[in-house]
Structure formats: C-alpha cells, structure tokens
Image (cartoon, rainbow, N blue to C red; front, side, top):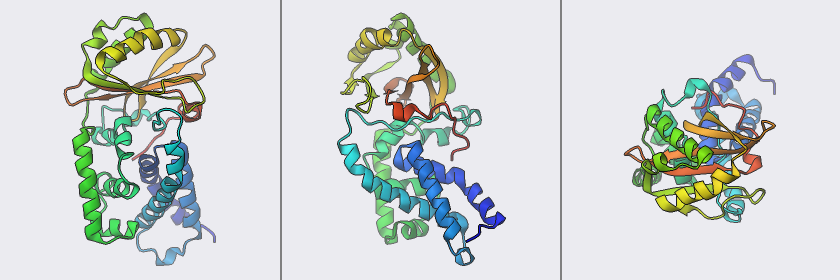
Length: 299
C-alpha cells in the first residue's frame, strides 16, 4: 500500500511522542526506535480510511508492540549479569533541564527504574494517563481492558510513583553544584564538598552488562559511596576526560578515553531536599554506543 504524503506527515507529527512513550516503557533507546519503526510499518499497511484518529491509532499500536517486547524481555532482565540500568540518552539542547521540568522528571534514570517495579500494564496505563494525558476510555481500548480495571492500574501505579518520590525537579544551578563536587572527587580525590551534598542513604549502581568491569552490587550509604569513589572511580577514571551533558533530563557526565571513545556515563538522582541520592554509572558498551547521538525532540 502506498503511503500518502499526509499520512507520512501524521506519523512524523506523532513520532516524538511515540519515541518518548516507547523509551519510557522499554528503558532502551535502541528498542524504542525499533518499536517506532515497526509502528510505522504497520501504519503503512493499515486501512487508514477507517481510522478516525491517527494519533490514537499510532499510540495504541506502539503501546501494544512495546508490551509484547516487555514480555519477551522479562527472561533476559531476570538473568542480566549485575545491575540492570536503562540505556542513557543525551537530550538535545532545546530540552535541557531549564525548561520542561515536568517532562524531564519523567525521563530520569530514577523514574525509569521505578517503572521497572510496575507490571507492564501498570507501567503503560500510568504513562498513557499521567504523562501523555490519555483518557481512561482510550486507555481501556489500547490495553484491551475494562475502564474500571484501567483506573485501578493507574491508581496503583501512581501510589508507587508517589511513594518513590522521584518525580520532582531539581534546579539546574543545584545540579551544577553537585556535579562540580562529584567532578572534584573524581579528578582530585577530594570528597569534602561532595560529602556535604549526599543523602545519608545514597545509592551507587553500575551496569557493565557482563561485558566490562563494573560493580556487581549496589553500593549503599554515604560512607561506602564516598569510599567507592575515592578508592575506585578516582583511580579507574584517572585518564578519562569528563564531559558534561544533559542525560535523561538532568545534568550528567560522559567520560571519554584518550581517543575520544565513550568509556562510561554517569547520571544522578536527587531527593526532595536537593541532596544527591542516586548515582548511576553506565559501562555496558552496547548501551553507550548511541549516547553521542542526542535525542530531540522526545516527548
């Protein structure tokens, strides 16, 4: 079936939202882009004359495809070597944390990790309603459920998210202050400034995917995290260049070796008082392969 220009325009208008939905559902940019491409192929072969709302049809098709992928991914996540973290994405300049704080709060690593604790349908229902403003009747059609059941899914998911306290904005200037203290600890081994900015139960997690060296267990607590930074990261990252970037809606770091190749990334989470309570280090080369390709726009 030939795709008319207007149909291509309709898809391209929906693409940023589809990519944002798929990435939040899957935690993988590569998988999200594949899901959006598969949605386009289905759109090309669909009987578009009977589609009343292209945007709703595309959202439904993309969501259902992502749910299928999540079911298939369950086994690999269970047997993942070490700690699984979502693939970091570098956000284009126009989507930096100084604007769109609400959007940024739904892209952070901490938020995506919290979504991992929900069932796939809870995750989808929450995102469709709370992030993409879809009405309950449309969510029910998308998930092929009764509307009251969808309301319960969203309610349970919202309770988990609120308990997790991960959806709040940290001012850019505070992020910059914390990042400067972290850089000082990495480059010079001095942790005095960083120690004053860490929460008592700060967590440091690293994802090597079993392909490179990375901490297998999550490091928990102020003292243990500081020791890991000074005795570990300060030594291991001594020859790397630290480059600031907007990762998943917050200020983060991309680390490069002497040839400019990406060796690691670091993204951060903050509590409601503005203290650093999460450090997420990506070392898995598969998840770093596309980090230089900034995403924008993503809704």
